[in-house]
Image 1 (cartoon, rainbow, N blue to C red):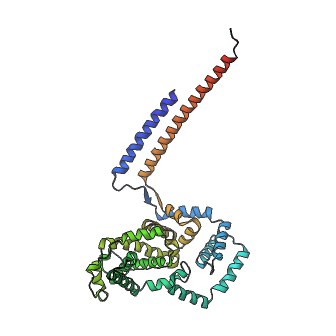
Image 2: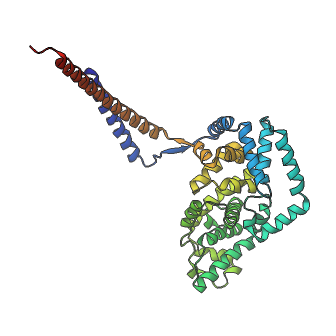
Image 3: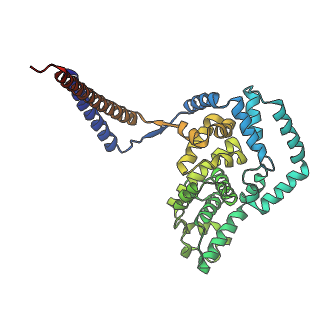
Length: 364
């Protein structure tokens, strides 16, 4: 009886604590469930996870998978072999020999030149290969932005559907090239990020969720009615038809992509980007690259992009208190119900035994 009263009292106290902290969370404008981890915390947590996951068998399995494609997935092979060498993870000699033989046959000068040409003419032919840099180089030029913008203008004037994401990324590139203040701080980083997103989109390596999120940022970004007829000769004037607020948001996302590629390279950045489903994921992966540097693609390859994104954030102190009080309340409720169930079972058992004794007693 006393235990039941104590459990009820503790459950009420836990419920009060839960409601109070939930109210504080809801009433605080800056409250959020997750906060960004520091670079040191990300580095420690990811390295700890890699020590567990990057076993010799796991590395070998991923190398075998990379060898199954034709041509082989050389970016993945190179990063995994380099990581295994740095961490002194043993690789079977038979597997190493097969990798070397494929390297000699597939990475000749003529093969690389042919792959580069195919990548420039058909971006989907090299979604994540080393030759992808050939396609990215085209997207980096202002001519690529002008071409995308011109296609959008032609589509508008002809009444056709406009690819809002393409014209949005072209606007980021043109604004960065022109150095316009309307970009909200866009720079070479934003320009490079926009080019990477365009290259990933054309190669089909970006997730549908990420593309949908980015397209939401570009709806009605450009008011084509305000464009001058000779806009191509005056790119700076054409930016007057662009919604500066939306352009600043898109430029921030492109800037995060650009910052990512500056730390790990364009091809590696594209590999990492395929794991992002939202601009928030891009920011988390960019923060992870601040902590991990060149190890970022390896961490994503071995642990998975979603896990690296989770490891770059942590529950905020206020959120931890809400969760803690909630778990405490649920635990006490479970304990109370368990005590009541135990008492009911004991009472039922006593009743059964009493009935059995009465039935066995001789009749007077």
